Image 1 (tube, rainbow, N blue to C red):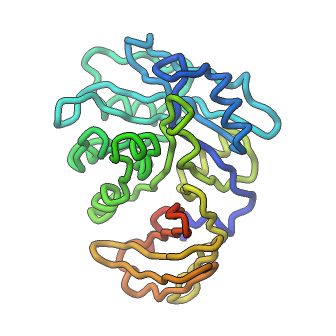
Image 2 (image 1 turned 45 degrees about the vertical axis):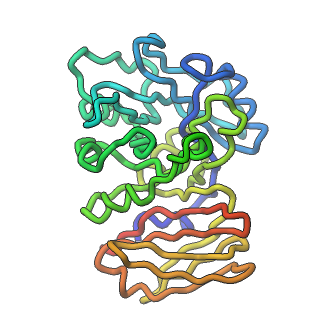
Length: 298
């Protein structure tokens, strides 16, 4: 299982990939955003300004705010071209070069995403339910690494932050994507510290984190921790912080679960999932969840 991170060398680093500062439509400066996330216990952050003419196609250089135990990934939210409902694209590019050139007038969303991926970026299709993205739209982004499966700002503000079902539709069609949770914070109040990823890496080096993200070596969380997921023979084993529900999701209607108080481990047969993929969801007594990436069996 190539994308199971738990037995890999290194440790998990906590980060938020989608955030804004005063360089686009955020409330705080980039330095202050980094400080707040660092003091909240995060290991890294991406400040992803809106890459549009209104904000002078800014890509914020946050390298000055890195420390020995906190780093930053350079990012941007790309908006070139239109989706089917007529709104601009929202495409997250993490690890984008500072000197990434502004788009030509006729460049499309898929084209700018491909150009960013070719320049080394991790490409995420963000908050699809928030702005009416369809799976037909998503399938045009052939450079995508992942879907933003939880957007905290969209969830707490307009109840449109949940997108595992959207990602599952693509997985059912054979698209091999991972899923990441973020804040998409602008105010760093109600919209912050609600969803993040834990990336397995040997170091906190930005390039090492980026490589691990591209390989799907992370899980997402609102609070619960997943300590281990492993497959031994025809059984999948999960270990986690105390939970009230541990569940599996797979292709189509394939699913399974165990409920109880203070669950710290669960085991499931894998036979029903082996023709495609399985992913794990852990829910604690407060309703917060952690999500693994899809695990493919071939």
